[in-house]
Image (cartoon, rainbow, N blue to C red):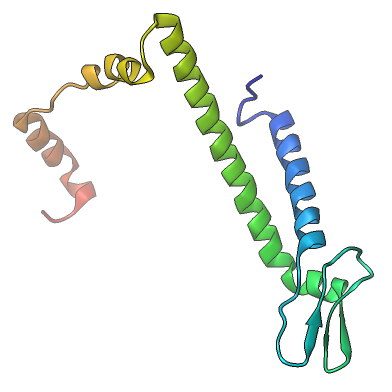
Amino acid sequence: MYVSPKSPRRSFDLAAVGIAAFCLLLLRGTASCEAGTTAGTVTEASDIVAKVDGQAIPYQELAAAMAAQLQQLDLQRQELLLQGLDQIVERKLLENEARRRQITVEALLEAEVENKIQPVSQEEVEAWYRDNQARIGRP
């Protein structure tokens, strides 16, 4: 089932996927190890994620310090998921139509897109340039 990019259900589903991915990322993440530090896998919010010269760094401190970056990463991930979904839907639609017509996807694209492109004459280029010169700026 294809859900429109503007659909509230799609937004909810992607938000749920994003939140789940964020939680998994935090649970799986590790702190960097430098001289005098130790790091382990984050498994619970109460965990100590690293120690520096005997001082514990709790998960909450890490999460607070990285909250803005993790939120931005989550938004980027959601956008990538949307782009990926759009690409898959587009590919499936092309494959289905090509199968229906009993031709290849390449032949379908050529018939429906490439063969319908009309060449632009030099006069049309010059007319467009004249009409849009103020918007374009200097030649």
